[in-house]
Image (cartoon, rainbow, N blue to C red; front, side, top):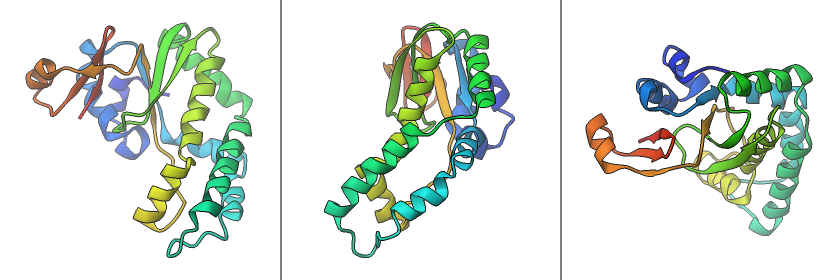
Amino acid sequence: MYTLIEAQSLPEGLVGAETRRLGRYADLLPAAFVIPSSFEEGFYRHNNLPAQLAALFAAVRPERIDEDALEPLCLRAGALILGSALLDDAVQGFYRALHQAELDSGPVHLRRPGERRVERAQARSPGAEVLHALKRLWADDWSFGAVLERLDVTRSVALEARAVLVLRGGAGQPDAELAARLKVEQAWVNPDGLVGLE
């Protein structure tokens, strides 16, 4: 786990492009940190999820998608993600990152850099609620809409591990004045500070 300032010097594939941009405005940010893509990758690997998901979707043909057959597969895939466990070391590392960022109590939201869909949690130490929100965000990658979009765009259900932002408060609203000041297309703010850039 990395602060958004630390993320500025890390590869985009590890932390996300938006994360690196947000790190430039550290003085405007609420409490936040980024979960690197390697954390999700480790979760998938430890639970042998790539093989299980490949077997689950083996009959799906991108050139001829049977949406009625696809939907229950997506539900099973989401349940598989939610029912899989993180290694204890990973869980403890996650809890430490929450505590160090002072995000182990109060409202937080999680989202992928560059995306606006969020999962919310009311954090209580050590942070199990936030961990559950993270797994819901991962499971959403296997929703019917997400899988159908991947099939349409990439002709595959496979996906790459990606970073996740954890930020204090809600998802925020666009602030045109701040966006103009920062010379960005959109800036999203909540009462705690800047929580998104486009």
